[in-house]
Length: 326
Image 1 (spheres, rainbow, N blue to C red):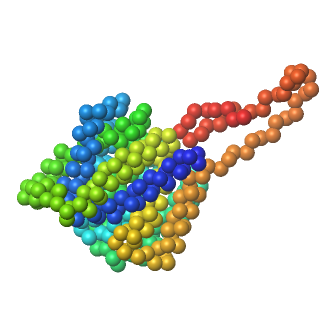
Image 2: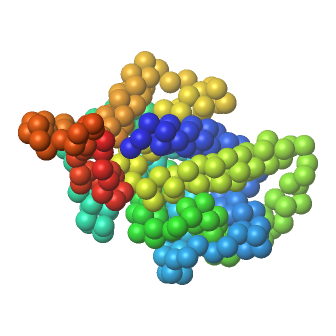
């Protein structure tokens, strides 16, 4: 992965880390299933009117929307509404990274390098340390719901890679067409028409302003910017290379929740967070291949007045075609 794309992956991690306290604010006014429906409806309407549909089969578009939209956020918002702290939710959701690597290995037959396995293993162990340390602050059900959300995210990661959309941002926007109607129907059945009516009737009040700000952040920053960059990276690199960056999200999420809700991390969490960052960076770094020395050419093989061309053919960057390195 190039330094520029690694920086873009870090930007995504920041966007998604701050997304957790913002989501907690939105859930103070919106019930979880309705929040999923409204979140994606705000994107779906302009997308249908202004954005060309990505040139991929409908089945793959539906799979991306179902996994990333319905499964991931339906379970995540339900878990957070069931008293999962936003910082801990950002942590548990990162189980999506090892889920993604395993699913990609089975579904797409992507090979996992030793470096990736070691880096992911280090990060997973550090996440496990944080999870065990904070396990007393969350009941079992919210944790299980967030693990289901992580599985949905992993399925979505691999589905995006499988879709191979020519314009990743268009895919990010068009996946928003899938969740609104099913989630609104689910909200009507589970949360009830009275709760839905009350939510919309009071949405423009001063008390609802923090929730509206949180919703707008979720839509514009976490979804449009975050997933636009994420799908672009997944289209360019193997899932096992991109997915480890998602493990940076809980580091940002814990810090953002600390600032927003005074969820103070202690020394164990801070040290483990540094280890997570190190494991991700180690897993994403592609070591340089040594260039074999060339045999000295005979004097009469070099054109007069010029230099012999030195190159190595057949170097294949991740997700790219063979190139000549000079």
